[in-house]
Structures are given as structure tokens and as C-alpha cells.
Image (tube, rainbow, N blue to C red):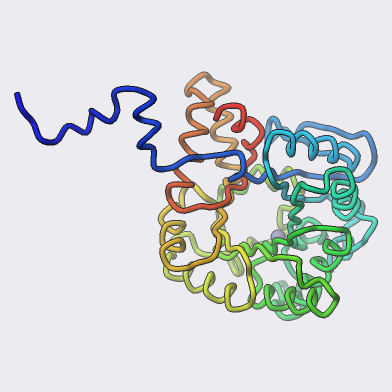
Length: 321
Ligand SMILES: [Zn+2]
């Protein structure tokens, strides 16, 4: 039988499939998140994120070396501080684990891009991402503190700061303080469309950042909204963001595509802790082929429009590519 259209011709061998493949996931698309804690010689697996660890700065350096050697160009550093208070002052303490780890990593592996998470929730006694006045998060009072945190990371040696707090105006506040302080080369990756998501559960154990009262719905986005994401991204770009982000990734791939089609900036997605934990739980029960599923998922994120994928799978994924 003669047929004009036989798409299967281009699927007959791996060689031909490889020639016509539209999306290629590579190690250089990935960013590996790491969690640093006070002390030395500490490497303790995070129960909620199997395969990921709480690391003292010296051990974070070892992992940074391994990450760079695997071809992954960047790490994203989160920290658990020695002390917490109402305003989160350990977040800009140059002796806190994040600042120490940034400096140590940049000294040991200068080529590795060090991105730092900028927020207050891991550092405040109440676990919210901003200052609290009358049981509410005070946006404008929080901005100078967020900027101060970003500056301390730049002073420690970070290449890029990544504000995740979702306060209005924080990108402009950070940009202006960095520029005034001689750090105009430090870039900002803004968590622009960050949704109030149930997928963050395991991270809160990893970062010890569960809010002590209420939730984050008054500053993070409603999962039902798409147009609002475009508005948030537009504002962050106007304020000086260099890279924008959609978080979480998997349930928001339509947002990723819309942002990609609308804007010119590099786009990051965060393949968050709950997405990772679901894969790990299913794999532990033998329900899925983990390597295939992970590569398929990350490829889907790239196909949807992500230029950068922040993922706890990074070190495993590069072995499976
Ligand atoms: Zn936060």
C-alpha cells in the first residue's frame, strides 16, 4: 500500500531519532540546590529529600567539586542558620553557613556559578518570608532587609542572587543596593511566578522554614492564575531581573510556555521538592523506571520553554543522559 505520510520512517533507529530530536537535555541546563548548616564535617541525609544532604560549608565544597566535575555549571545555596529571630538577622550575618559556604566554594571551585537563595523564612522565628506587623507580612519594611541579605551574599562571593520571597518591589530594591555598593556585575534570578504550592512540603523539612502561623498565600501566587504570572514576570523585568523563574515546574508547564513566548529573558524553572519526593517514593516501591522518568520529566520542562532547570535530580540525571 502506498501512503504519503509515514512519520514512523523517522523513528526506525536511534540514529535517525537522534537526527530529528527537537529538544536536547544537557548537564549545562541544570542547577543543583544544596543545603548548608553550621559546623564542620557534617553530611546528614535529609529524610524528606533522599539523596540530598545537610552539609557544613567544608562538605558543601566537596559536593560543589563533584557537581562541577559532573558538568553541572551552577549550584543554588540554601542555609539553615545558627540562630533565628523576629527579623531574620542571621540571613545577612557574614558568619552564617550560607555566607561561609559561598566564600569557600568560590575559593575552591571558582568556575562553578554560585547562586544564592535570598529570603528570610529560613531565618525568622515565625517562618515567614518577611517582617511581621500585626500578624501580617509587611511588604515595604521587608525590602531593605531582603536587599541586605542579597548584598551579604554578593560580598561573600556569590555570582548571582535569587530572591524567592515574592514581596512586591524586591528586585528593584536589591538591584539598587547592589549597584550602589559596587556589585553591578552580580545578576538577579527572580522567582517571578512563585505559586503558593503544596509541592513545597519536603523542602520545609529540609530548610526548617515552615510558617509558625498562617500560610504564604498573601504573598505567593494563587495556583489558578496564569495572566497574573505574566504580570509578575513583566514587573520583575522592569525592575532589573536578569533571569526569571516559574516555580514549581511540573504542574505549571503552561505558565512556562506562556512566559517563554511573551518575554526575551532566560527562563528558569524549579523542579521542587514535592515533585522530586513523588518520583523517589514511586521508585522505592518499584512502580516506575526512575532514570527514564526523570529524563522524560526534565526534557518536558525544557521542551515547555525552560532554559535553566533547578533540580534535586541534577547529579543523578547527568549520569542518565
Ligand atoms: Zn521564603
